[in-house]
Image: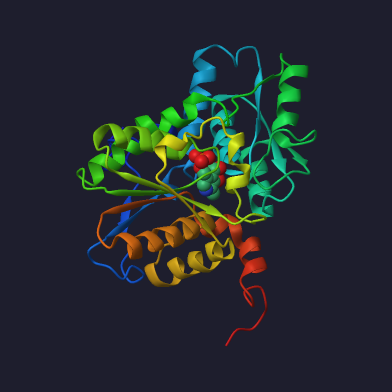
Length: 321
Ligand SMILES: Cc1ncc(COP(=O)(O)O)c(C=O)c1O
């Protein structure tokens, strides 16, 4: 493998690391304050298309190395899409199958992509981000499959597995530290399983305790795939409140309009969770006036065209002036 000329023997060598970080790109037209530069970390540049490449790879390697996937045993995992897409593609390339248990509200594009990536799909009626505790919730259903058919399935369980946050402690955190040459003052993230926030924040706090960690969440009843509102947060065992300075709640519709602004002004084809985190970052730029911000942009817009049509008036209609 050679990261300089980007020649690889297999796709896994392309996964992000300190030597091969996902790009940091500065926001220009849409950030009014030169004294507070904001950089977006483009996680959609990862080989399977999202921030979840990192956790999926760590979860899969852990199961493989412990011999949990021997004798044709596959995986079962609840997912709102991105983990499943990364995990399915990786698992199939390694010779394992994945049953992805997916909430019904997940965008059509993600369901189709899961199948294309090679997952077997079970769609259940559930919250947008899998919520435990519900009889028919996707997390419980995946757990039931793993218990009832233990020979057939191992369940990584991204909501409870320390390998999830450790992946970010080992890769995303060190990448940001190196890429900003230690200048980072504010980290902006969204929350799903909370592996991203916990892993990066633990790493950065060890390097620079003053780094502020700002989590941005959509308003309740939201329609932003992959994310959780405050009321749904307690379900992730990986959430560590001591690592988070501020939790901002942003009208979820802004996730869509801001994503569109990023596309049309910065040339960044950002998805809705990136739009949301950017909205929160702008609030803090106005409040703190000075700093050096890094925002995690989890994935790009291509998987969300049906959601964009739902939330941006006129986008889905025929002739435009
Ligand atoms: C689009 C998107 N944004 C953000 C996140 C949040 O990442 P994490 O699960 O590490 O909290 C996810 C997770 O599934 C996601 O799919």
